[in-house]
Image (cartoon, rainbow, N blue to C red):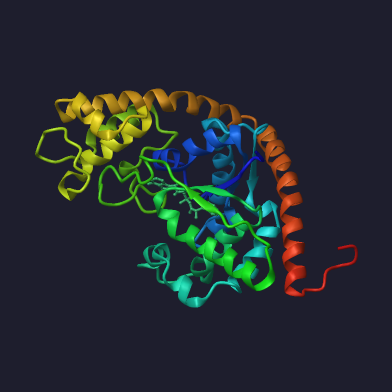
Amino acid sequence: MAKQRVLSGIQPTGRAHIGNYLGAFVNWVQDQRVNDSIFLIVDLHGLTVESDRDAMRAATLDMAATLFAVGIDPSDATVVIQSHVPGHAQLGWVMECTATYGELSRMTQFKEKSKGLSKVRAGLFTYPALMAADILLYHADLVPVGDDQTQHLELARDLAIRFNNAYGETFTVPRAQRVSHGSRVMDLANPLQKMSKSASSPQGIIFLSDSDDEVARKIARAKTDTFNEVAYLPDDPERSGITNLLEMLGALTVKPPEECAVEYSGYGQLKKALTETLVELLAPIRTRFELYQNDPAELVRLLEQGAVRANEIASETVWDVYDRLGLVGVAGR
Ligand code: TYM
């Protein structure tokens, strides 16, 4: 059977956290062995909110080092910085002209992210069209994402189908690939809210770069409740803190959270086990991250290699799309 193409992306707007790891990276690392995988560091998406030049540069390279540190193998998978491939912006515009204002207005992430901003960038509104382009550009079959990206993925599917109906079979219609647990890791301090690079306070986030002490401190302070009985009751909002800890431990140890629940008689025990599991996971990631961080030339080489391969695929798609739309190609195309 032909290999499936897998594509996913992450924004370089801050350090990666355990939600990114469980909701995305775990799948990415598994996928790369069996599928033809492309992983994007979506810096252009990072421009949709206020960004700082130095922070953007540092976060983009740190995210690349993180991906290699968690186990993405450049000989198996293509890791690429979005802005290194002009096709994203080119197809992004076509997708903006395929999507409707009504569709983009219904995106819940736009509503959440624009709340409270005094100036909302137009790019924040059209962001899902660029994300659709990211996926369709490479004819991706599967898109491993956490729960928060489901609506964007649905839009990408709708746009692919709409374009294909209007201009003939052009795009593969992508499918979401979800993890069973960990697809929505919650903030430790406020477990009714998603753990998020941009929205959570550092106390609510386990960063992949956190030291052993930081992990221990954050888990010790993680919000629980007064029931003091370890039970997995995911529908009870009063138990959302314990639910989150059990789901994290379950995802990390590849066990159903209800099975983890019966193993611990108190919250202290559960927190101790989760801390130990996290520390064991993060220590080697931190070491590998530092190796890449200390060798920027190697990092740049790997990213350039990714860009060459990605550009080959992307430019073919763009020219095909332009031709179907009746845009007159340059000589030789
Ligand atoms: P981003 O950068 O917010 O997150 C990257 C990935 O991490 C997942 N994730 C989580 N999973 C579980 N629990 C959490 N608390 C959590 N927070 C984040 C996200 O679901 C995502 O899989 N729009 C995307 C980036 C993107 C993309 C793409 C993804 C751009 N183009 C094309 C897939 C395909 C985003 O902002 O992800």
